[in-house]
Image 1 (tube, one colour):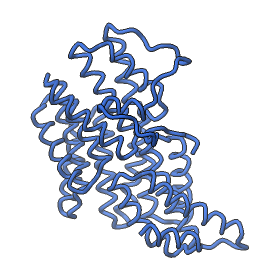
Image 2 (cartoon, helix red, strand yellow; image 1 turned 180 degrees about the vertical axis):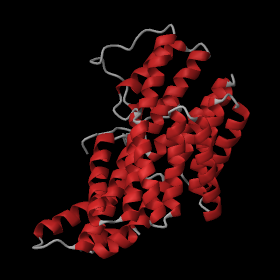
Image 3 (cartoon, rainbow, N blue to C red; image 1 turned 90 degrees about the vertical axis):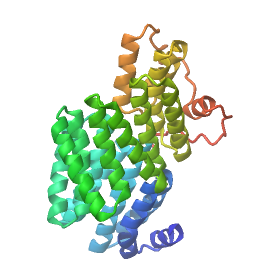
Image 4 (cartoon, one colour; image 1 turned 180 degrees about the horizontal axis):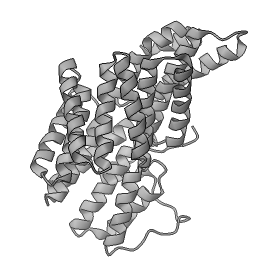
Length: 353
């Protein structure tokens, strides 16, 4: 698949790029290989833009392919924590889809633009994008993307404080995913339902739902999703007072995030690990972990807010000044896992790349 895509990009075959974009995007999204997906779609964007610059007139087929490639490339950037770059590419994709009148592609692009807003804590703006995307996807007959957007809207609605509506949206999405046989989508919906259950204090139900989500994600090889489910299971176990289970889940989440090169997921797990260490009396390590979270450009708004709350309520010193060096994330994670750093610098992030 990779070789065929590269050939199509190198030869300017816009028709083949547009045809294969959905399958290639799903492959890398499911496998958690965002860095490979970004490279593949990035090569297509570069080739299509170069061809457009050399052409005497616009080529509608090339513009359709470029719209899909921009959305694909942007969707991988937010997964590795390059949020500004993700929004730039996805905004361009949205604008191009809108200009070309591509309703189905526009619904998909809006879903990912909303996903790029989520780590920034812009939940109201995310919800507006998702509502617009749902309407477009349904009008285009794309139940698949509509279900993903509906579930994402459920998570955003939960974070905005309306758990009843969040549960309704996630339950509807789960029914659609089960009807379509989409295990990846079902895992997302179960995650939203688990988050709602945890918020109302039903920890047993939250653990069950996150456990089901994790099983689905492991079955399809989704490392990114597995890291998310494990972090949530760790948070539930920590809240329930089961430090041993929490530690196990969170170290497994770090492993999955490290293997899939996903800094935001690693940082979320680190934040929960710091909270667990604080509860078990290992507070001398808390500040060091939270300093990494607060300084890393890939930390989400939720991770930063949780880190700030921990520092505010725990009797541990504030982080050292920003000029004080911190341990690189790609060295810290192997150390926590009891392994030597492998030198690949997997979790380093260059936000201008």
